[in-house]
Image (tube, rainbow, N blue to C red; front, side, top):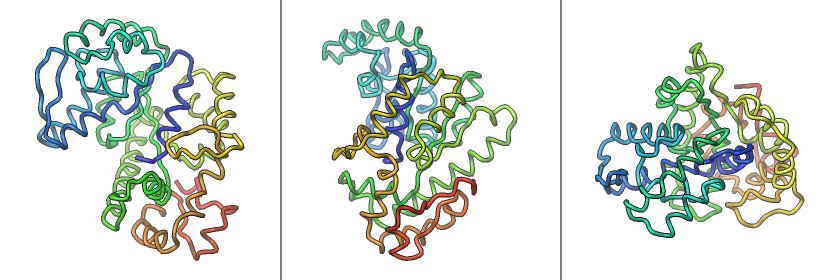
Length: 311
């Protein structure tokens, strides 16, 4: 969480006639953690008690949503923000009329099916998927492309604390976060060496997107074979190059994106940054991030802490 994925997802959602799923794995993660079952479309309960079963569930849900095979997903996922927040899924959501019963979901499912089948592009914003599961998805669908988003761990941690997620602070969490970033980056490097995958995985640094939004978005759209229209550019100008800083930390609208990308350096305590630097230096060396030499270096936001040429 707080990796910049919401901004990236919103940018991709601007594609013409795109169906956009917001975190379709969210309910699976929550329910498996609480040892609660998900409900299949035929009203059967399924538990996810092991890591292996959770991984299989993630693959199943993503395949179902990206291929419009909604009978293979789960009721809780269809009722969650993954679909309720989809701009072109209004007929399905209106059909439900706040009736979350399995029969009603089945009755309304054709509405979602039609929208999905007619969409020009299907997009899923996913934050709960390790890169080791990506090969199975790529092998099962030759039209699937993956954008692997990476962000400075210091900015992620600062963003989490800013929205009240203080339970996630601490050395143990910092080490876990950097380990995840490193592991997934290494896996991405390995996958890009495989001929059938190398042209279908893009590494996207949030710092690069936020500081050069139009150029980087154009590259991303080109990679995904999606037309980069004037409407997309206008959305970026309005929402990422605005002069008014939005006080809602979950919003992506009307902010100066260069300032936003480096704002954590002005607001974070130097001791906190130093601790993260010490714990995550090996990640910086791989990805091209820079440790703060001192507090003056940290506060000087005219100097970038990111060198894309290192990755």
